[in-house]
Image (cartoon, one colour):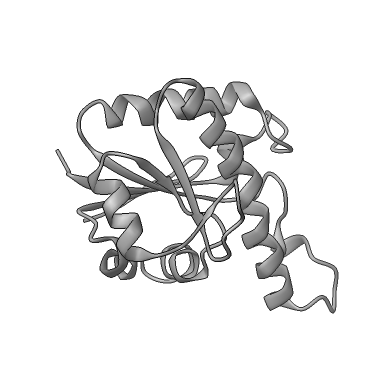
Length: 165
């Protein structure tokens, strides 16, 4: 069993069957699996997608790709909030860390604080953290290990699972 993992969960897992919006039945299933993993003394970080809210590839012609990526990063926040609330409702201590602290909602991302929370068996979600999102979602997943000292990385897409150790 791995000690510390980072799950990348596709935004599609947060949506209804049409792939749109936030579906709390779907999120409850995610939360159940995450809680089961945590009960096995695994430290869990989560990066979630936002394809259920915004897809950069659907941008209009002439719309800047970087601007679309920024919208996509910000769109990860609602999924993180929803998952955090469902996990907290189940008694799982969950925290959100993003690139800009949002009082009462999310701490500013700090790798040292993130590692401390993970070591204290808290689940940490990382929406809108370009360091992690670009390294893990766009480039090689193994690049993110240096920030959080991961022992395992799991990327969950709709039909595919990629495992990096």
